[in-house]
Image (cartoon, rainbow, N blue to C red):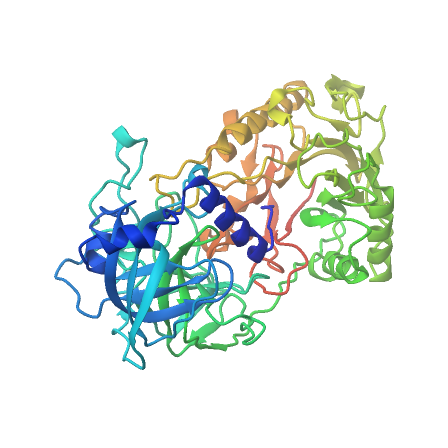
Amino acid sequence: MRSTHPRSAAVAALVATALATGLLAGSADAAEGAAAADPVRIHDIQGTTRISPLNGKPVADVAGIVTGVRTYGSRGFWIQDPDADDDAATSEGVFVFTSSAPTVAVGDAVKVSGTVGEYVPGGAASGNQSVTQIAKPVVTVVSSGNSLPEAAVLNEYSVPAEYAPAGDPAAAGSVNGLTLDPSRYALDFYESLEGMNVKIGTSRVVGATDPHSELWVTVKGWENTLKRGGTLYGSYESQNTGRIQVQQLAPVATQPFPVANVGDKLTGTTEGPLDFNQFGGYTLAARTLGTVKAGTLAPEKTKAQAADELAVATYNVENLDPTDPQTKFDNLAKAVVENLASPDVVALEEIQDNNGAKNDGTVDADQTIAKFTAAISAAGGPAYQWRSISPENNKDGGEPGGNIRQVFLFNPLRVSFTDRAAGDAFTATGVTAGENGQAALTHSPGRIDPANPAWVDSRKPLAGEFVFHGKTVFVIANHFASKGGDEGLTSSHQPPVRSSEAKRLLQAQSVNAFVKSLLATQKDAKVLAVGDINDFDFSATTTALTDGGALYPAIQSLPKAERYSYVYQGNAQVLDQILTSPAIKAFTYDSVHINAEFAAQNSDHDPQVLRFRP
């Protein structure tokens, strides 16, 4: 999963850091310096590239109409020049950073003196684009109650189909120095409107309301549309240009933010300044917010396995630990029983230790698992037994002190687990030839290649042997390295730098080699590699897992429009997978959509289920 933090604290920290490091241009004598500068227009400040030609310089008496006021987080207001120039590449709006609550009101005509700066949300290391702004301002209100400049329209006709230009190789892939081409590239189009008053009409919700009071819509209703209402992220070349994040300028305490699920409609007009932030890139900071019209989306339920079918599932339960409310355990348990039809084997990811994020050296998770399995039984499910290996303290990544790990649950009335010299956090399981030359694990359960540098600060794969109707099935539960640290799609580098891929590639190669060792011992061994792969079905990670035909990504058996398990920034995408060895020739696969599309989530991932006859 991606780690999340309270936005208010994060924004405050970023602002403080920016002031301390100079990311926010400005100084105590900014107003004095500005007084000596010639008046300039807002489009002169914005220029035709992402970086202001006046960056770091004082400006005086910059005129504009206030189009939005933000009284929390990064406090300030937006102004726009109602008299636009003839250059589509130059924005007519700019943010004025005040640090304290602004004293202006929407509709005020003002003159602002201060210093032009480029603020990078998240800091320069994030790769994010910068926001052109005026810092340490001296503000004069000339008049009030003025009409606002007409809003620029974001819709399927105005937003280009091509996402971004290729970055300048001489500048490490940066697009900052390139002249904007807003008629060709969506990112250039949005940048050309940075700080300006924009609006959208009725739009489909493609990212549900999150705990930070924001949602995602698309202004292109036809763009990679899914049956359930989302927008598919199906390749690195198709980033879905119509997506835009929506927040509101009014504090939630005074104006509750609407709750929306994927497929709902944000109806009417939503209008306000176009912002850029660390957590979503270009964002419509709504001064006027439309009304949510609820759709009919409901959580899915998979088909129950037949008597002679083995059902294997994978489910990331998002940092589950005994300190979580009982309702989380109950809701997750109900999903296992009702939505997943009580699979025979369930590989769980993100089971935390017995006291969760308390960082005191605790690594065992028997209490977490006992509480979960009890909740499943109470929900009418089987009395699952379990197998797992406790990690070394704080060596598997995730939340510090949480010690997340993978766990096998299995229904002993349907399937048995082959216990064989159970491994520990440090001992690698291997492959040996057992009876009749059939492959067997040296340790079951056991960890795969735990000393490999690929698994440093990451979850080590958990392998186990199961027997169903006399047939052995090997299951490998995975939780690959997080995508945290990768640059966003709106990065100042194009294509964005995806630094986390290197580690997942090594992890995939490690798992692939282990599967090949099973197949070398027993050609027709039935192997399932399951879990939170943290990468797309079209990624190099998936390609490495399948190398040499060792595994097949079963999600690719679904129609392309059904291949997703996670929704991030309005893009429905694959992170969770089940991959099969060649001997598993016929199966039924289901990505069971119960979380990712909904504002009310028990996890941020959708579980996956595969049914087959061994």
